[in-house]
Image 1 (cartoon, helix red, strand yellow):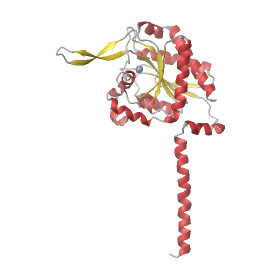
Image 2: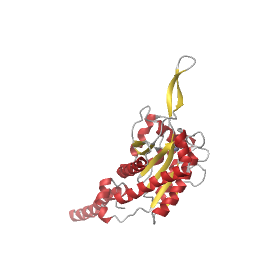
Image 3: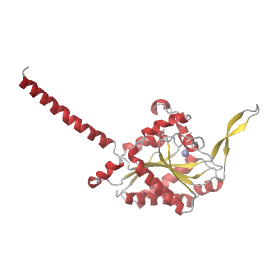
Image 4: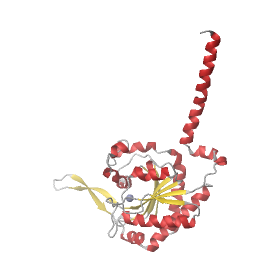
Length: 296
Ligand SMILES: [Zn+2]
């Protein structure tokens, strides 16, 4: 091969490789957009808030937390159905999709699949809290054993976004409880990359949570908490937590705990038509605020 031919071939190879090298980061960055990417793209972003997925927690054979009268799965389904109707009424042009509209269980990955497949712009998982604390009590043999104690005095609302914290004892109650449904799914370790909801050390896998949607998720969660607060509900704030149901959502996503089912007054409030209406209105106002603030 003479020099000219070699040069020609080299130019040809570079002509193929270089565009690929330049194109690759673009392909990746279009899949994994960071908040700063979104800012840069704002001038070309004609996207609007068109689809919201509402996820009533638990269902079917998985009741979630239990109160004196009701189960979490029933309260959150009622609130979610009312929220769906309210969104379509108060936010014309916005479609609201439920991950379940009956008393059935839906695996976590399927809940976010529904949102991802429908290209949802927002994912709201609705749950009731429960103040069950793990305590250490002295057993008959004198050894300390774990026991669960219910605390009916705890009340209020809190909203979570998916984070990647290592769980500390005492901080893990919500994550442990809300993630426990995984144990009832077949091949859960395969589906969730070896994740064991009972083992705090495995929670670090949630570091994979896309940081992309962190900022918007926190903003939306804050608006929700502000609305609850306006109605004098105790505000327990916004927290980042390793929650399986939010981990694979490809959009801003929150899990809101609308009250403590373990508190008899809050259980009654969440079961009442007035209470449900207030919670739905809080969520609607938060969505409107979010929609305006992001310029969607
Ligand atoms: Zn729950």
